[in-house]
Amino acid sequence: MLASEIIRLGISLGFIIIAVITAFFIMRQINKNYLKSSRYTARKIIEEAKVNAENIRRQSEMDIKEKLHQEKLKLEKDLSDSRKDIERVEKRLREKEHLLNLKDNNLASRESELLKFQREIGTKEKIIKAKTERLDQLINVQNQRLERIANLSVQDAKKELLQNLEEQVQFESAQMIRDMKEKAKREADNQAREIIINAMQRCALSQVSETTVSVVNIATDELKGRIIGREGRNIRAFEALTGVEVIIDDTPGAIILSAFDPVRREIARLSMEKLIADGRIHQTRIEEIVEKTRNEMDNIIMNTGEATVLEFGLSGVDNELVKHIGRLKYRTSYGQNMLLHSKEVAILANGMAQELNLDPMLAKRAGLLHDIGKAADIHIEGPHAKIGAELASKYGEDEIVVNSIAAHHEEETPTSPYAFITAAADAISGSRSGARRDNFESYINRLQSLENIAVSFDGVEKAYAIQAGREMRVMVQPEKITDAQADELARKISKQIQSELKYPGQIKVVVIREVRAIDYAK
Image (cartoon, one colour):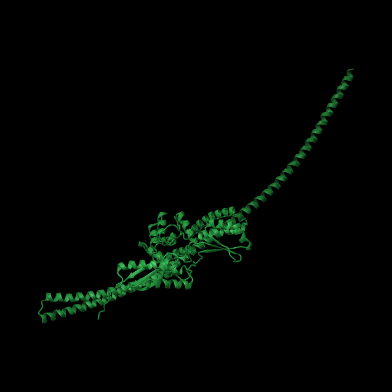
């Protein structure tokens, strides 16, 4: 029994040893497999890391190259912009250099004229000195003769000689002063012509536009019936809302809109075009379109004024004045578009101011605003120059600009050179060829009628219609017409013109009475 116990114990112990050995080998094999798997995983991770690192390196290189390319493009663009800026600066410098050269040439020419004038004065001084010396000799001779012949004292002789000398010197001085004044006047006239010509050469715009009608084209004449509407309801509503006359006749493919107010006519034209394009033509739609177009027109006027102010580089112009400038686009005078006319006056005034070494910006401002009164409400009474001056003063314009506006038709006294420049530029723009449209035959007939009315009055010697028929210059005989009668004559001529002729705007009648005293020295 003990032996069997020992045997069982030995067998158990053997199984345990065998199990331990087996477990050892199994664990060893597992460790080997795990180690092998770990090495494989490590190698795989390393390889993937290498691939990722290579990809990251390549991507980084591509990103760097792309960034360098973008930086290169940006630098090239900046360089191109810099070159363009440099070219613009160089162009401005060349223009300024050209202007400086022109001014240098003008200064050199004026300096040459001044030197010539000084030489002439020097020559005349020498002549006067020589004559003075000659007079001294004559005085001495005269003194001797008087003492010898007339037994006069030296003091009496001196008194008589000095009196003769004084009369002769006064005569020669007056003659010299008159010659110098005439020469100065000729030089001033030549210089003024040169300044005006230089200013005119810088600008010559076409300024003529239609004044009373606009034409709207339609695809088919069937639209005319829809525009008229049942029993004329549509056309009456359109005319009542826009304030224009719609003329629908047998003219194929066209509708005529007639009104003397260009703004109302333009609103009507745009509204009619929108209604035709929309196709829905009835009273409600007409009201919507007209109201919308009226608002758009306000924006167009404001944008036009802002663009004009920006074009001339003016600053600090009140928004209300900007609106009035925009309205000038739709104002005409004798067929002349007021905005284009104002632009040309501004350009001409700028050129004259530069020639006279005055402030060109101030001259441009006065020129652009000189007819701003024509953009005011038609119900405001008074000359447009006075209305414009009141508007400019109200909205903070400089006193020089205000006076230039008020005085450009001689209704107020000019207080600065800019007022004369503005008036001259306005006259040039209004009277040059092509500035105004008028039927030639009716234009000539109207001017002849004006002159015939003036010369029909007793005491009128000559009459001239000038400023495209806006002014009458009447020369009267001074022995028949007194100063008091001249005022009455101007009133009578104006009244007869009003009763016999039809004309746009107003006509200024100027009666001139001149008295001359003439004598001849033999």
